[in-house]
Image (cartoon, rainbow, N blue to C red; front, side, top):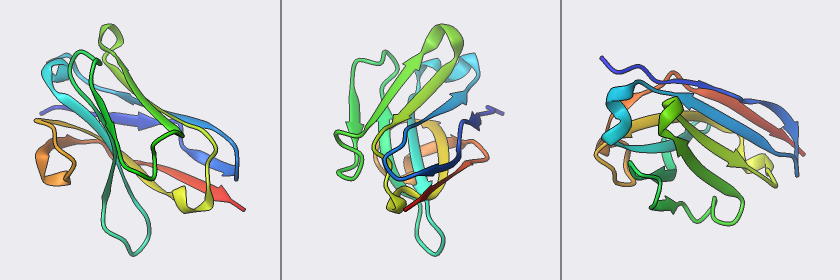
Length: 120
């Protein structure tokens, strides 16, 4: 079983930055890695994904220009740098690994989530 462990969430004010970190296992190196988020009462939604080499990335419209996904395969780690945070970014953020795509069903492995709360 592949384990993904997220960290880096917290409570920040609007306009601040956070960097989320997801530590994976070596066997995920060939996978797409992605970040999803889920706000209270809402469905889990795609935020960003990155291919195995880091050479291809995709973002949700809400994340474009503010968030950056990256990976360091030598450290088995995936990052999500979030800048200019807004209250509507408040959610539990999940790291996922799998075949790719922008739906949660495309990913087989999930972390436990890390809470991000942005106050206005």
